[in-house]
Image 1 (tube, helix red, strand yellow):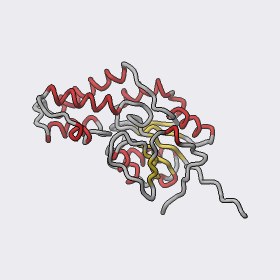
Image 2 (image 1 turned 90 degrees about the vertical axis):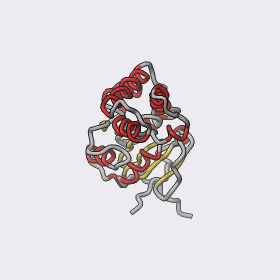
Image 3 (image 1 turned 180 degrees about the vertical axis):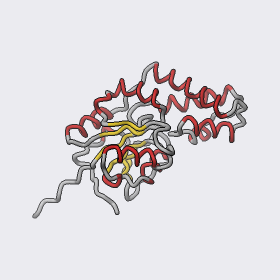
Length: 223
């Protein structure tokens, strides 16, 4: 009986940061929650879910538009950025299996890119923990024409690596990031930290990065 062909490896691994590689999504949502409470607004789970994976500027606009924050978008964004950066600078926890995934990609000759909605200075703090040597490049907030959920950050990462987005495997934890990766044409490996990502033709959902081996992952290009 003929053996089945080995799964095709992705041309590149495009990884979200907050919540996916490091446990900072909770720090980000805690930052938003504290800010909402300071402003006398409700900060329940359903309210916070809308901010998961959101860039600072988009979050600030939402807070002013939908939650009656009177500071204005610029001052709100500055507050969020200051408080979130302080939380990250105090230390981050690497998600289980994250470094193993990145090192496995490197061993297989698969370049990795960091594709994050966080600001450059936050990403650089986290890269000290993850190891900048594990990434061929990084794309942060403001370094693509539009941020997530638009596809631009993933398109920019694929272009920077010289690969077709359809040949890439994106790794995400929020519906916002998942929408960006899928809109770019990538295959998606989802490790959800909030509800809202469903399995599909181009989407595999796992509970932990510890469950993933790129050499065995069923990566096939979908037209």
